[in-house]
Length: 308
Image 1 (cartoon, helix red, strand yellow):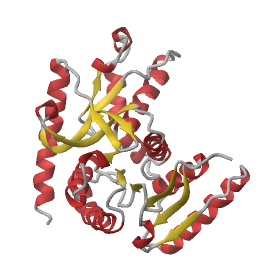
Image 2 (cartoon, rainbow, N blue to C red; image 1 turned 45 degrees about the horizontal axis):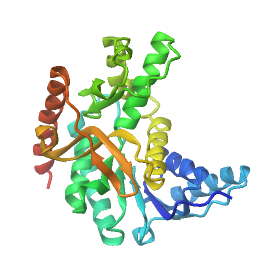
Image 3 (cartoon, rainbow, N blue to C red; image 1 turned 90 degrees about the vertical axis):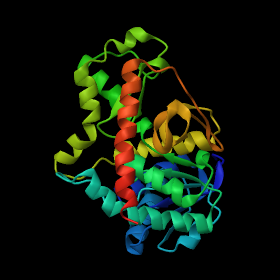
Image 4 (cartoon, helix red, strand yellow; image 1 turned 135 degrees about the vertical axis):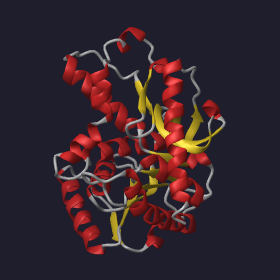
């Protein structure tokens, strides 16, 4: 039998991303108890029952609590926040901020009340600004508040390389940083083989940036397999204390000459969440990309401040 890495993990939001994340975490047997929270208790009960049945196929005895009561998250080691409205075709990011800011703030107030020592992973979009709001609301050490961005964006980059070039070589030492959106950019300084980066054309980068919008524009909702897989990957590496290097949206207080905002930068995961923020020497293009993303986030922060 696989030994659980922690006693309790909680997931806030039982929609497609939340429920798929719960399923992945349950099959990986990362915790003795999994709590699924949603304002719609029947949705939680339905998803929990289905996940339990799926786990039983593999002889995994899933212990899932389905609830609309935040007190059940008490003493969770990790809390994953996926609740909120998905982006719809034609919706601006400001409209999405207005819809989701109140939801995320209320969730974080409950996390602060019931498990203030948890590591919190934010998945709700717009991700960087929601991570910033969570950090401000939770008042936790910044190492404990992490936005799930770079794992998904980097995976999308790798997939676009494979799809467009049919190259079978591994590109797992190339990362994507910056804003989780149109202002993401390639981080070549983390690439051990700079010749690999030359295969990444402008159309591959553009396709990576537009991947989320492309999925939404098909008209069947936003992505959920990719985000949930990326989120479970982060949880597994945090609980496993692997020291894995990824990019994630984190609060910056001087790194890369940026202050008081959350952006995707290289970090090392550990059992305390973020073990360290990794500063690399950026090229002129990368510096410009990072600071363009920062300026955009500052404008979003001003808009966020006007809501409360």
